[in-house]
Image (cartoon, helix red, strand yellow):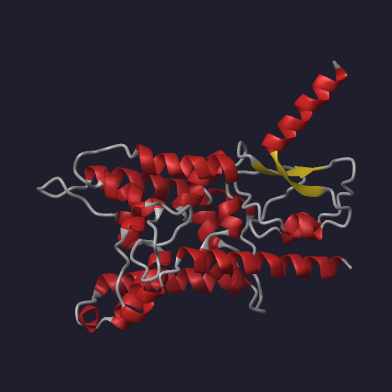
Length: 299
């Protein structure tokens, strides 16, 4: 019965992930014509890591947008981009990573391949988790501001040198569909392909390595994870300490010890495998409203 419930939930979540990936890349003409959508919708930031240059993308990637403002040579603080990220972070936290991110879906599907899995040793894992914050600070924030040319302009360093989502969703399709691009790709494209393939291969044996160790957007959302409206709640009275949630967690955290950890992507896998049904999704705003009603009735 528990296995059936787990499989049903897994299928539902994958369906949501696929629907989200299609929604964020719904400009079909881009794939048929091999070009990027540049219409009015492109000024809007989507909440996930979804490359601006993806042929199907109708919105902008928040990390790419943040770098574009910082590398303008004017050192502006983008209240619009930052506000969008904060809004989604405060409402959903890393639920966006668990349910909406297209590259998260790719990692989940690769991890389903039946080969021997690897669990990173705890001490090394803790150290590696800081890497995404370093990448956020160095590649997304500092380099676009300080590593500038004679004209005061810089580069989107994370997008250019690291982002595997951009390579997979934008670089490969555009190069495949444009002969002119095929004639000019060089070492940089080969470097990005190498990074992407390395992460994809590792995703077969380690669950969500990009989300755990590299993604700067995940680093931002993690700051809001404990305070977001959308949370997980543990009923400690019902909990039988079976350990199923910790064993199945794709982010290798223990929900019993820290139900809304900064690393939790709120995928709900812990909820689906819990035999005592002591874990559930909660919207904190509703909880506050209910508590106020109870207080008013008691008075």
